[in-house]
Image (cartoon, rainbow, N blue to C red):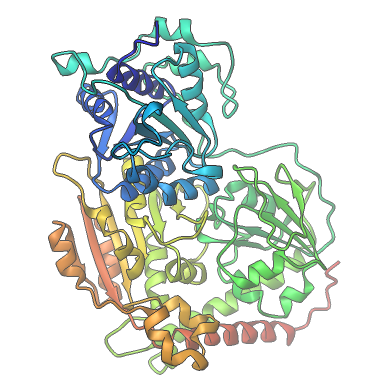
Amino acid sequence: MTADRSASELALGVLQQLWLGGVRDVVLSPGSRSAPFALALDAADRAGDLRLHVRVDERSAGFLALGLATGSRRPVAVVTTSGTAVGNLLPAVMEAHHTGRRVVVVSADRPDRLRGTGANQTTEQAGIFGTFAPCHDLTAAIAADDLSETVWQACSASGPTQLNVQLDGDLLPSGPTPEDWWQRPDGNLAMAQLQAGSDPETGRDRATAQLQPGGDAGVRPSVTIPSGGELLPLGPRTVVVAGDDAGPAARLLAEAAGWPLIAEPTSGARIGRQALRTGRLLLTTGLRDEVERVVVIGHPTLSRPVTGLISDPALEVLSVRGRGGVATDPGRVARVLDVVPRVEGPDDRAWFDRWQAADQRLSDLIDAGLTAAQGDPSQTPDAGSPSPLAVAAVVGAAVAADTTLVVGSSNPVRDLDVMAAPWPPLQHRFVVGNRGLAGIDGMVSTAVGIALGRPRAARTIAYLGDLTFLHDTNGLLIGPAEPRPNLTIVVLNDDGGAIFTTLEQGGSRYADAFERVFATPHGTDLAALCAAHHTAYERVDDLSRLAQALAESHSGTRVLEVRVSRADRRTEAAWLRELAQQAVSADHSEDHSLPLE
């Protein structure tokens, strides 16, 4: 019965099951082998059942799907043709794997009988993503209930899945009109096909979830507070480290215990009274030597001081598993917990008070240095260029209630980590980045996807370095019929890779080779590039204008270029460390007769 299913019938069946699994956004990179998917998707989009996004570059398409999944918290499918098209999705699939984003790769393939024959655009694409995504190699003979179960698993799993679909024979649907190419799944038929069971993520009855007329199947809650965690004894001087995607549980633990909270910008925990603005800088001072216990939640990756802290075998390190089941433990010294721990009450307040006082002093010293007319030379690299730290401060302040901020890897997120004051609680903000692998690729497309996935946000801002922006300028390549986001992209342009100046290769010993093989200056005219993509552009040289622009309600995508110097980044890093020592030295000069135990 199913062995005679045509290519278009198989494609339609896969798409219908994706719809039942909660997919409402599909990204398509066109090709011949994927033709039956393309026509059915266009018909579904016209019917209002799915939202279709067409992209000519598969790498951008993959990151667009990743962004849509991040913003909407739904599973999102990306459809490609056969051959190298599938391989171009690997970077996005890797990031989705490490962050637990539900991206379903639907790769159109030729039938198995043509593999290994040299047939055009035929390769071993089933399982091409290896350990990063499980693969289901689907044929026309797959039974209806098996197809339903396979796609449901793909939509509900944590992380990406590949559905490799073997399409044989005539690729075009036989029906004469688009109404024949797509039909929303019939509820009664779906009920008959479904086996009993529940979604392991939500606990909802599977059949009931799939048949919601509004289509909310597969939506994950934005906030999940675990309960029943291990009870931690009070007393040891404890710091909570919240890395990427830690969520509110890290903040709630720090507040319940009264412990210092070092929360990265994309942690979802840089909020409230326990969060420190300059926590990672304070870890370069004597305060770090007094830490006895660390609780790690999320995926911290921004700084060596934090990595050194959570890798110290002399400390008690507790690391909580993330949504993908991995606990961040680079030193292999942690005791791994499945659930965020809890405490019965607050610890001695003197411990946090010292961190808070030092944090306030250091923040004041940094801000004073940035505004002083005769400040440190690292803060005023040239007369016409603002400080990168000052730019980050403006961006951080622009993240008001109901704002989405997508921040790129490299210097922007690290500058924000120093300059963004903890945001007040009870105001919904969404600060994210591709921190699973901390790569710079695909960030424009990711930001576009996040903006499209969160249409109710008051505004969406992306804060990217110039190389990050240039690495995915194809993210601006959006056809005239495609959904377009309201997105402001702030490009911090220092004409190269400034982050390397702060690392070992930025030392004088490597100066002769540094500019070419690390700094990689490009001299690209961003205004001309944006004009070629019909994208609004403005060069911003004044920080007050930047603040004004970020507060504006803007329709469509625009780029704000802020040019800065990278000449003194290494000096700047040393200056920050020196200020941190000053802030803590002032603390030690005061009377601390109160016991800390």
